[in-house]
Every structure is written in C-alpha cells, then in structure tokens.
Length: 311
Image 1: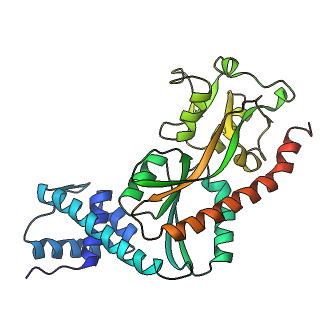
Image 2: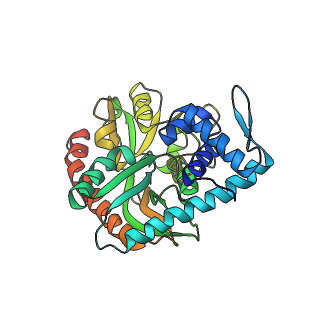
C-alpha cells in the first residue's frame, strides 16, 4: 500500500508553485531540511522522482508535473471539506484568506480588518496583496477564499458582488493648484505617469485617455506612492483613486483636482468561487467591506477639501 501524508502533499504543492526549496520552506513555516526530507519520503512512497535538483533551482519531472496538478485538486477538495464544515455554523469562524489589489489594500485594509475583528472575533484573517491576475489564479486554485478587485473580472466560475464606486483624481505639481482640470484629450499630451504593467489601474487610466499604450518614454512605477512622489518632483502628472488621496499626498508637494463629469471611475467588488460552501459567509463579509469603504470615504472627505485649498 502506498502511504503518504497530507503534509507531504502540501509541501510538494508549495515546492511546485515556488520552484525553490528555501521559499517553499518559508511558505510552509518549516526548515528547508525538513521540507526536503518530506519530499524525499514522498518520492519513495510513490516510487518515482518528482524533481530534478540543482544548486539554484528545481525542475519538475514529467511525473512531478502530472502529480502537481492532481495534488492541487486534492488539496482544494480538502480545503473545501473544511469550508463545508464551517459553513454549517451560524457564526463566522476559522481561517479567512482574502486577496486585495495593491491600489486598494493599503487604504481600505485597516478599516476592513478592524471591523471584521470587532464584529467577528473568531475569524483568523490572512491577507494577500498582489495584482489581479495572480489573485484570480490563486482563487481558482483554492489558495484564497475571496478577492477584492476592480470589476468586472468576467470569470464564469466566480461570483461578483459590487461594493462601491470611486472616482480617479488628477495629481499635478503643487504650483499648478487652481488650474482647470484637463480633458482626456489634453491629458494625452501630458507626461502621464503610470503603474507598471500588470496593474488593472494602469489599464483603467489608459482607457480614460483613450490610449492603448503609453509612449515609450513614459515612466512606470510599482506603487501609487512612487507615482505621487514623482509628480511632486515635477516629472509629470498621474491619476490616483480617491481612497488613496489622504495617504499618498500628505508628504508630497502636489495638487489634487477632480475631472469634469463624466469623471473617470472604477467599481471595486469582491469575488469568490461559485462552488465554495462559504458563499453565505462571504456575502456577509462583503457587506462589512462595503461599510468599511463608506467609513473611509467619510473620513477622507475633509482631507481632499484641504488639499484643494478649500475650493
């Protein structure tokens, strides 16, 4: 009889995903020798080599690649079994794995965590911040319970719940305070600073300007904070979501302006797998996220007014 453990399967899944013993060990909260030993025992139990080992990286064998897909399905089923048990309870308890895009997480997360902790103290909340494509992949693989992203994602396997809509604001150097907001056509002629590829906010900004891609000389950044600081240094202009204004402009010499109607905007929502047993609980959590967003909007309103000089 072939004997292996669920722990060994989780270790192998981490190794297959991350491609590195050290990173896989960190993800599993074990030492590298311990993880390596468990992988070796799994290979012995299955009677086949799963990985090709080298000093710098690991490569899955053909057997390892095929097993990785099956292991992912097994672990997803195991997690859903636990979700099924939790779904039978009347209260929100246990582990909650939520992903957020980087243009939402730094601003909304404190409110969300605070409200969830107060309203559902038995929840064990784990947060993952990364770009939308990675969140959707991890959601599909069962490594996240839900994700907060810009809608629509248009994935038939996912349930989408809209939470709130927010406008994009123009950030310009401080000396341009009081000037009228440019039109989308005028903005195309300016040096527009954007987030690097992979961020949905980049595509939304380009869409507002009716640009499929920016000029080659444009500068990209990995965060909204860097974009705002670049504007403050006189390197161009940028767009940021309204929720980011209070945090990102407090230490930068910039002015913030609303566009004329119709203003560019985005809808933020929460998505989860249609098959999850936790659908009812996740709907409750989405309501808490919506409440948190509204509280953040009210909190930030005076900041935006002050940044515009009270106009």
